[in-house]
Amino acid sequence: MKEVDILIKNGAILTMDPNKTIIAKGFLCIQGDAISAIGNGDPSEMRTGKTIDAKGGLILPGLVNGHTHAAMSLFRGLADDLPLMEWLNHYIFPVESRMDREFVRTGTLLACAEMILSGTTTFCDMYLFEEEVAEAAQTAGMRCLVGEVLYDFPSPNYGPIEEGLKYTESLIRKWQGHPLVSVAVEPHAVYTCSPDLLIAANGLAKHYGVPLIIHVAESASEIEEVRRKYGKKPFEHLESLGVLGPHLIADHCVHVDDVEIRRMANHGVKAITNPESNMKLASGISPVPRLLAQGITVGLGTDGCASNNNLDLFEEMDTTAKVHKVAAMDPTVLDAWTVLNMATSSGAKALGMEDRIGSLEVGKKADVIVVDTHKPHLTPMYNPYSHLVYAAKGNDVSHCVVNGMLVMQDRKLLTLELQAVLHKAKEMSQKVLSWLSWPLPS
Ligand SMILES: [Zn+2]
Image 1 (cartoon, rainbow, N blue to C red):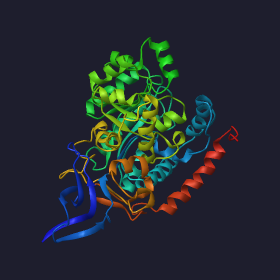
Image 2 (image 1 turned 180 degrees about the vertical axis):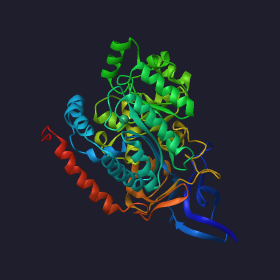
Image 3 (image 1 turned 45 degrees about the vertical axis):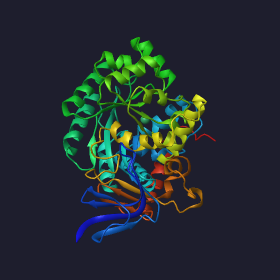
Image 4 (image 1 turned 135 degrees about the vertical axis):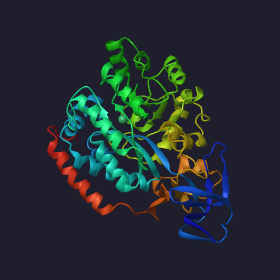
């Protein structure tokens, strides 16, 4: 008799493979860390370690959050509805300057709990103390691409920037070959990193063959500042430094004109769009339909919790589809499949992980979620892509498997003690309040 570690059966399988294959009622087998079989109907008799009954729901690839600052979960709702510079200077920067390892670890565990509970299996993070982020993701059993944020000023983690590059290199070396954790080089932005730093960061990324990740063209004020300093547009500036290439992942890309978009496409730059954060901070709307039209790979991210304010990619998908329709005054722009693709297959490709994850195919790593559709807001179901983007919520995800390991079963986290994570997060909020020298906005 055939043996498998995990059998997921009795669900509609949305493979998100290049052929857009859907199996109306099928099963999926997991052996070790990989998908070993996908089939139609009921599976033949087999010995299974664990059987998950999808109960007629949807089986799809785990979602990929292309851009987070996970530990900012501890700043959620601290200070909203403020002008950007007031928000940063009075609340975010003063608190971040006091943070330590324990703070980042606590915030990341909280974020991992939220992400798993809403069907995210992979996240790409940029923050301080990223060693702690990697450790927390490993504890939670999540896949991640992490990198220490680098900029011209001293960091509360590594001190001067030379140490930041060394810290990043030691992260790369430590986690090389790890099944869940990958490391990138992550200079913060064009306006916070000198040309020398950007060139050095790129050299490090190229040397180890890892991605280079940076915020680009997020706000109009950034465009103005870069023009004043360098007389160029952000991607033009990066091109002049020799930093553009398929290894570059650019977060936001809000203020990019056709020349900048062509520049991105010519160099194979990947983009991550974060519409809810861009809306909340009134940064603008990234021209995602035009990026896609130029063949640019676009993934989807939530950005940090302080500017979103959650990590639910289902909400992000819904917003993405709708904001572009209203921006274009055209309801045919960014259909549901395209948006789900950004959160799965294209998201994986943007992070350079398309050979491992992003679709359900035999041989790929088993990052799989099950969505429970036996609910009023998901009944009846004519089109599963439509439901996932426009009707489903993160808490409709019932099961979550990452790298062949079940991390959530029937909405219960198996890798994290949720009560302990919540308790510790509340404790940290007292620290946050004590670090503020500015009163909370009323
Ligand atoms: Zn960001």
